[in-house]
Image 1 (cartoon, rainbow, N blue to C red):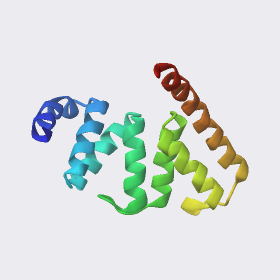
Image 2 (image 1 turned 45 degrees about the horizontal axis):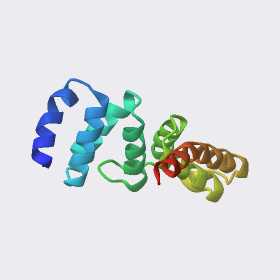
Image 3 (image 1 turned 120 degrees about the vertical axis):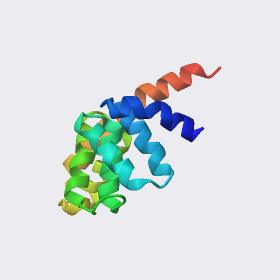
Length: 133
């Protein structure tokens, strides 16, 4: 399935379609083609794709496919979090709580991100409970 999906995604990804770039990067990353994945995530992240920004944040945090850089990781996670990306908001809340990414612990910032994360989860939880018989 992956080779077919990759061939379908290549044309729109090469044409600059950020969601296609991010999805193709995800597939390539899982196939351990991390350098190409990082390149595509970067192209999508620059266009404002929150999934790509969060993934790239993780790449820079761990040094996977790119040189490890906590400042860049924080920047990408912050961009994704500002767009409402749940994992990125969680990462920022933890970073401000524990002093990660070289930040000084800041309980107000940690609480801010926890609250934003809770706001995004509440509508999904309500919808899921309505869907159950």
